[in-house]
Image (cartoon, rainbow over all chains, first blue to last red; front, top):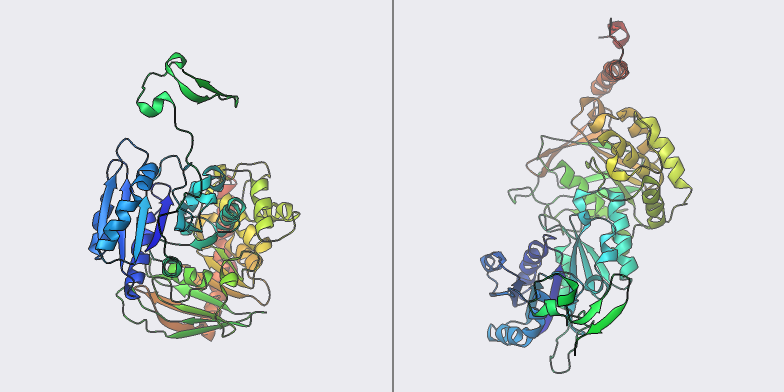
Length: 233
Length: 258
């Protein structure tokens, strides 16, 4: 089973780009299944189904969607196998983009919106820096100069990635993405690892504390001056 | 060295083959792209900018010197053969004019001294001067457009130049066109402006997303173009006067030779 993990900022055009790529894969007779992970609501499942792709939607609710995607990977692969698919595509919403949901042998695809400004690639961290492919969308909305600067910034953060300029409306670049998906290798989960550790998330907020006052917080707490302390038993 | 660009036709918005199957544009030629709004002019320009290989909506294929461009030629800004002035009127990048130009010069492998030259040139095309320390996002439509023109002319200096509706935003379009279409380049101009359309050598007529036909500018059109330019000059002079707060008392129609 090939495993493609697609992450991206909200509204960057992940679904639109994937729909075009999936059509192209279908023409090449590669059977794919899609899992769409979102937080509270999504109707993207219908969009994938409308082009005849087996689709499953997972809502992570109050859990980080990237973490949710990782815990459920085995079940997703099992489900894709039942569909006789050769390729599982997981589209995950992501929240803070500090997590990188890619595993070592999956194909990691980061979709990033060029209108978000040329500093965005520097801000988003491992979700871009550990990706195999950076798909830059909405380039048609900005000047050629800004597009070129954006691309340079992406390569500064991740010099090894393949950059694809794509347009979710016209489908430009999506065939190139499909080609990369087609060429990607099989993944076995037995020894599979994440490329990058998830961020520290072991404070009282993680388990539901809502009070903001400092005295209520326990766990590993990082101060704005850079010091990190552990408060608790 | 680029001697010619070939556009191999694809499909229109209805999915039918477009009537024009092949257009070859040679070095030194200026080709117009005309047609109603929504007829696919910008998409055609977009296909050429990306050197499309049947991978866009239109399924057109672009050849350079009769050959398929390499992946690197298509994507690496240092090797880019195409400079494009799109229809965008505003910058979205949150940085100063100086930083932006330096970054772009770095991307294109151009000298860092370019920034001053770009600003100087831009200021010949627009009204209120642009300064290096200005934030890009506060520039007016006309200032942004002038800066884009100067940036394309100096930093993105490429053998193929694509210009989308230069008449917008109140900059001096003839000057801007002169700045962009250097000697020996392949120039394509998307326009609704008859003055510009008739100045070109040929024009591609777009309809419903497809290339409908190609018209070579006739001798009488070239003569008309000269007359239109005079009318245009008259209007531009008037525009400058109105902008400067003058009161218009008379116009010299004789000069326009109507």
